[in-house]
Length: 573
Ligand code: HC1
Ligand code: SF4
Image (cartoon, rainbow, N blue to C red; front, side):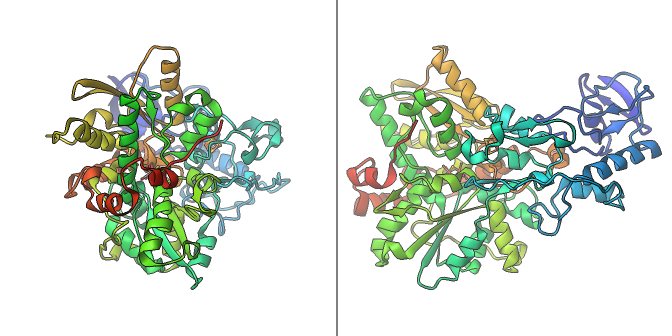
């Protein structure tokens, strides 16, 4: 352990700890802007400067602790230097906070307030003026709000191994953009939104769909049906001051009903349906010498990554549509028929933790009879915005249920939202179908947790099934490389495009860099889902009575001709 003093407080921390982390341990928050734990640690913005008695101030985020170090984080000189830093950033920042997507959640705004910046125009002068890039179906980039911290660049490059954005130009003309100044829509962006999650300001945000959804809700000729994704319930409460890690399923259903949706269904139902389809596909590939490993296909960012960067793995992808697309297809076929509504008059809105789902919903192959399976996608953040706009007192709502039958799910559907959840849900069903035995323990803990790549060997009857789980496309790339090189062989793989899985998708409530030092949203939000799963009366997809009834009355068998027509798709290299 290393012993040092920070602002007169003595601290003991392991060697290699940064001064920033050591200070946090001592209850001292050093301001940061470019720092993002485990993602961007470059000491560039100079907001975290501290005085160690050395000739120059050091950047605490990259400064390792040393024995006997005496650190001052809060001297008049340091405070003044930080204020000047902020004032210089503001001199080239558009400062239109009132209509900014990040108003009240902006780290720059918060810091100006915390550090007492009282003249935002102190260094008024020439400013860059950039066009807003809003051609992507998922992501909007507004460089007028960019502070060049490079957190988005690190997320895109390192966490996602995509690297389609980076700094360009020099000096005053430096900006973040794509090669040849192309819009994001014209480069190989996978729409994951991890750049948004990393951005401290309003330079990156999702393409707004709330206006389109309000219009649908006001259209009396349409039946508007909503379905929230598994991960939304694990984080929506955060937008209303409810602690991270609290699942708000019942309040969410109540809020959706109060917003005026005609039916409040649940993507978790289709997650159970996905397990029936994908589990059957897996057993079929095992028995018939099909292409293995089978790789899950729920995450549209991952799908685009595979299509773009690893097209040789396309035959490995499950042909299953993602659950919310399946739900949309079933709403516009099975349910429409049941209630006697023309599918043309039904509009399906998905609430997703994901920005790539906006892109996915527009894929022309994801529809039936000329109708898209899903009409609009809003993120968890956009849903929170709509709830606030409607004046709904979310925190005090009663718990309500989803509507039957496309709102009835098992615990297996719930855990889809966390990395490893789809694999665990599939194993619960595949095991029982293959062995015809009841599982003693449905928890497959080996595939839980936030390790980048998880592996397990599961005995299913006579067969040792090798499974792997990767989250974040950089981890997926590592996993695929190990298969390509012949180093690893697997039967079944789950990939989710975002680190942590959907719970920390690009459409989830923003967690500031300071908060990420205190807790890990990946773990806390996942715990909310595992807890909900543990308390569900049914925890295996094949025990979902409404799914079984739909097979009996409508689809026939899993992977039937009709199931293929409605619930499966193909991919393009
Ligand atoms: Fe996901 Fe999925 S789990 S992809 O991670 O398979 O977004 O939550 O809705 O469709 O069910 C996201 C989450 C979500 C789908 C499901
Ligand atoms: Fe990169 Fe994902 Fe952002 Fe696209 S959406 S720029 S792939 S981080």
